[in-house]
Amino acid sequence: MNDTLRIKLQLFCADERALGPGRADVLEAIERVGSISGAGRALGMSYRYTWLLVDGMNRCFEGRVVETATGGAGRGGARLTDTGRAVLAAYRALEEDLRRASEGEALAALRALLRPEPLPRG
Amino acid sequence: MNDTLRIKLQLFCADERALGPGRADVLEAIERVGSISGAGRALGMSYRYTWLLVDGMNRCFEGRVVETATGGAGRGGARLTDTGRAVLAAYRALEEDLRRASEGEALAALRALLRPEPLPRG
Image (tube, rainbow over all chains, first blue to last red; front, side, top):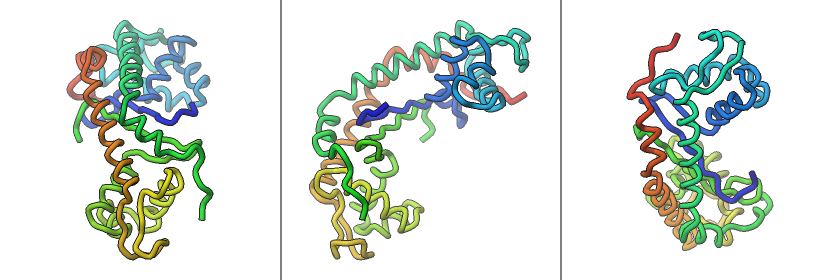
């Protein structure tokens, strides 16, 4: 992404991160490749780290977002639950809403003041 | 901030970060305390790190955002230029616009699925 503005949305469950750009990408990758290990590989992340993100999401949302074939932490298949699909869709919709809402006067004012390239250091 | 949703806005100048939550806080602190070193202290950051953030912003926006009494990197007084004030005001306005825009169906759907507290690990 080589855009002027990046909008990062993070959802919290009390003090714990429940969902953000990285976790949303994990959900999307699981939907696409059908396993936690495959999703991690696709995103260049270790199995353990990917699993920890999934476990965190499962503990933050009412009902799991990902279910595994073995029902546990095994390396078998995994897929999104209905909750997982609803969470992912709402997160992408919120990103899109804010992307659209950002295109107003304030961003135009900032863009007008931004250089196309930074001046060199020193 | 103990909110369900955090919205982080980052502005880029080509590949360099031009402005985000930390840099906006630096501008605000300089406006309040009148020096780069004082702003750094107020934010718990080293003088060097604070100065680097200011230098980066000065190189990314048309006209400097901060001017120093000595005109250089000295530890004398510093204040926002008109550009600096305009940049800070537009950034805060954009944050506020997106905060307001976030309060719709998508966020309501996510909040409805979020637990008030995460389940315990394991």
